[in-house]
Image 1 (cartoon, rainbow, N blue to C red):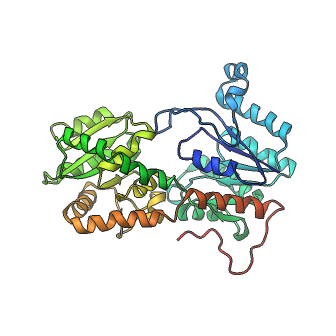
Image 2: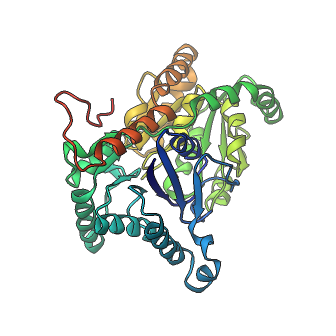
Image 3: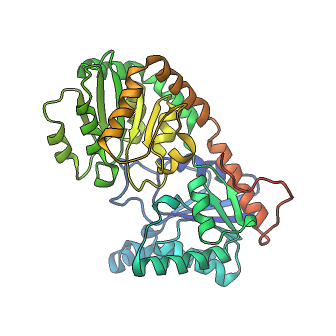
Length: 395
């Protein structure tokens, strides 16, 4: 059995199916280490860790006395160091490269000669660090890339990011960022009646419903969306904003008096299908969005998508066939995009159908196969691929 250790920040609901699939891999003994169970930047309501086919360690709980003494992050780094030396994994997979536990995993791998892979959602279009921070980031990433056995690209903008820091052809593998498509496709069918009840309660029956899902923070540009809806002089449109955050009060003030806009507050991950079921299109006008898995979820649920073209998911998944890829962060362009989707019913239905077709190629099984291939092929060092073999290209 190959001993594989995977380090990630916190248990995220969208990673659970992927890690469960990896844990069931034949000939693998997988240990998943999380830095903590939770942090303030999570964009969902905290959910319990389900039983998994792999070993799971919450690092900052491994030594509670140490966490109380030095804090969660340092305690996690120390606990991970102890775990690595005790278990001596044969391969390490690090989700991320900036926090102390990931730093520990990478340095340990280099010092012991253990092959390692790095995965992350970094997006070349969001890579805008400046000054001293830029210098340090560049030096660290180039050092990591030179020593990594594999760099796992989740999409086109992510692959371009790794290439920017010197990734070589033989290091790059593809594991497309994915959610459980079948779950969301089934769940929206199950939630149809509940979604209909909400539409009646809000007076949205027969309207074209736009949906935003996520944290209400500045970089998400939800204010642009509220302003754009208010610019539309149509009564047959509505906007549902599912989420909570520091911008909520200001956004509610901005939307005051417009009965076409509803705020749901925080929504648990398991409750999201109800909102996808009542909507026609997801809108994600965010700036600095490394990926945006709500796009995957919405497409699996059969929604059209409006998102900025530099959103990681939009680079690969959003086009004229299933939505609108925005060029700017302006109210005018967003208003026009909403109008285009709202005013052409036949085209809107085609977009929704096309979303489901496109996202079918971005599956948990496909992502797992990509990670397994990366581990297998790079376990003995950098392995040249056969001529003509695919090298992490995302189409």
